[in-house]
Image (cartoon, rainbow, N blue to C red; front, side, top):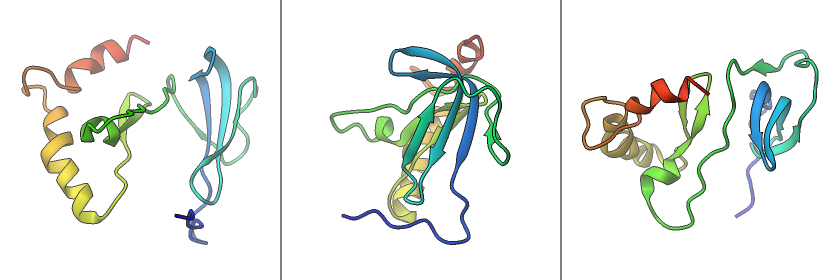
Length: 127
């Protein structure tokens, strides 16, 4: 399926992170730019300052989780930025609602057992 163009009222994403995990390990001063299709078109380390209009990420930037087999939650989880879990929920509104109600909401609840993402936050803040 061909990628759809970003609507005209949407500005392509430009991020600048003081630290990001890239192939080869941690890199400093990383610029990330998304194209009109929403895919990353540029990832450049060593960019001293954020360009005008870029969103500055306050903490380390981690790549999304790649899962080669079907675990719906792992496919939904995208990463962590600014001490905030970021979820990518492709699909219909109904599919997003199901992911929230059946998967994500309970993982953000510290009382979910035997484990949850909420319990990881203190350790992730140490990075």
